[in-house]
Image 1 (cartoon, rainbow, N blue to C red):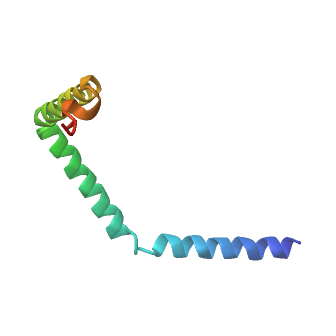
Image 2 (cartoon, helix red, strand yellow):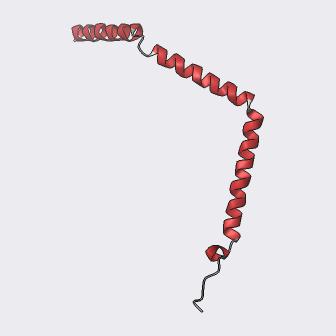
Length: 83
């Protein structure tokens, strides 16, 4: 039983050391962090412009939705009677 535990311990240590030495994912992590940093900086720099854009967009959507609800069925178009 004790020998099995020692084998498992050595196996786990070897796996951990191999994981620590493996550097394949480092470049991807660094690039993701840099891109997130750039996105945050752009959001800070253009905060006012982004807020104004979103405000205008929401006002437009709200106005169009109100117009759609208040417009009579058929969109106010006349239907030919065939006279």
